[in-house]
Image 1: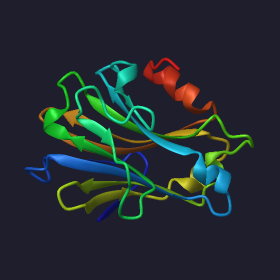
Image 2: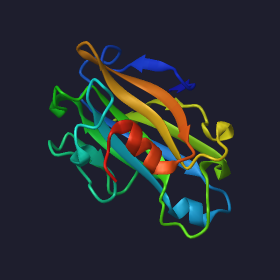
Image 3: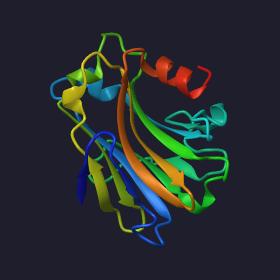
Length: 187
C-alpha cells in the first residue's frame, strides 16, 4: 500500500489492468468530539470537463445514494475501518463524466460550531471492490486543517483511456456552500 501526499496522483487502471470496480473510503478520528463525529458527511460529485457537476442528481450523499446512471453509489455500511465509502463501477461511468470529486463536510445542522480542524486523523483510501484490497491511502490530512468545515478529499479522473486517483486536500471555511458554488451545485 502506498501512502500519498496532497497533490500526488497515481494511475489506477494503467497500473492494474482489468481494474473495474473501486471503493473510495474515508476514515477519521474526531477524538472526544461526538457532535463532530456524528455530523461528518462524505459525498461524491460527478463532474464534466469544466469540473462542474453534471446536475444536482450527480451529487451522491446520504439523501441521494446513487448517481442517475447507477455507476456511483454510497455504500450503506462501510468496511475496513472507514466511516463512509462510495463504490464506483468504472465501465458504467458516463463518458461525459471526466472526474469524480470526493468531499467531506460538517453537516450544517449541528447546533455547536465544529470544524474539520478538530479532527485528529483524516485519510482517504482506494480499494479494489472485488476483494476490498487497499491500493493506496492518503497521508493524514488532519494536521493541515484549522477553520475548514468542508474539504475536497480526492478525485478519480479520466486520463485518456485510463483512470487516475489524486489526493486533493483543499479546504473550505464556507462549508458545503463553498463546494456547491465551485462545482455548480444548487443547494
